[in-house]
Length: 80
Image 1 (cartoon, one colour):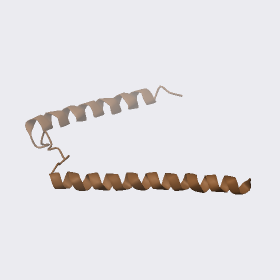
Image 2 (cartoon, rainbow, N blue to C red):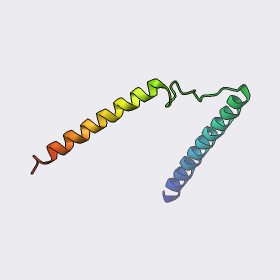
Image 3 (cartoon, one colour):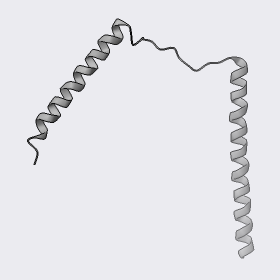
Image 4 (spheres, rainbow, N blue to C red):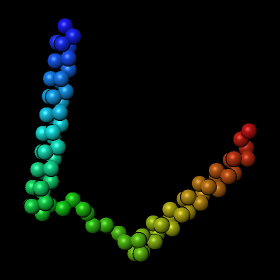
């Protein structure tokens, strides 16, 4: 009975190892195929930080963060 359990455990681990090995091989194969086809998943940035839109967004973000810090400091004194 003990040997039957051991046999089932070994077979189960072997099956899991086989499936995981096939998964790794399929991922590596798909990476090679994608590289050969020249598919690139990197996207170009839509805005430059030095552009006027980037500066406006950055200025707005600084204003929001400053307001949040100010509100936090104001409310911090009322807590006990």
